[in-house]
Length: 144
Image (cartoon, rainbow, N blue to C red; front, side, top):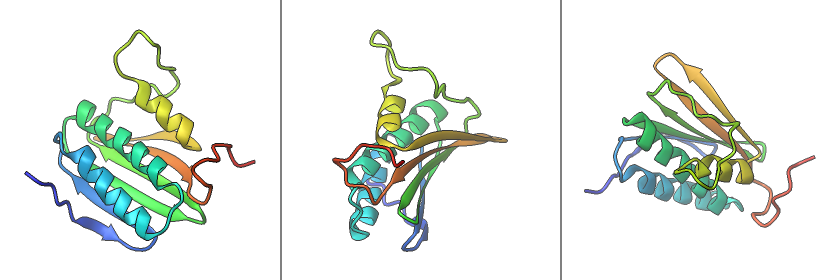
């Protein structure tokens, strides 16, 4: 089975894609994100694809339902957001320990992104990771 999730919204600055809650969704999200950002010549495409993969994997694993991927570029910054139907909030302040299963995705997102926030809503939540899209991938310093 191939997921062909057509974008719900697509423009030069915003992409919205509904994804099913299955094991193929992270791969589909990676392909869609890579294609959109490569067309925009984003120097942080690889970082953004990794963040999208982690966010969608978490939504599939923990929310067990469909999710919505939204990529929004604004003034050199990329907002990567994944909405799901679980009201359970991730513990974004707990560092991952070496003796536990999971939890490393949030560390990856914190390292690559400039900010990580969770926005609760009735019937679910949206996890946002901001990424300076105009900063070269090899430059991991935070903007001052």
